[in-house]
Image 1 (spheres, helix red, strand yellow):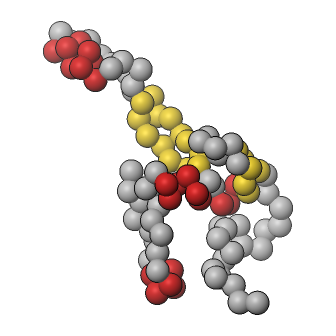
Image 2 (image 1 turned 90 degrees about the vertical axis):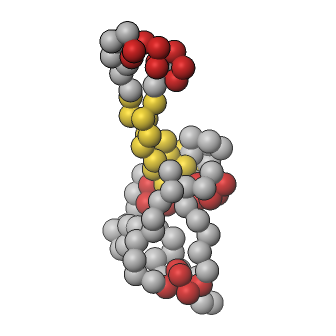
Length: 98
């Protein structure tokens, strides 16, 4: 049976077993090499209040939050795109949209 992807949708290659992760959105269990990780800055202060406080000279800290998504959730949120067969064959890396 032909394979759809040469790497079977994983990044590990021929390394053997690897640990499993949970999707932060749906809770699905997947291998670490199939997971899509996104790091975004997060501020606990609402944006309008942050603007007011910064005008007064306050420093608002932002935290980097790393989320782990399965492929289905990453496609749903638009982090990765569905590509055609010809585009999947190209060797250029994906441009992630965050």
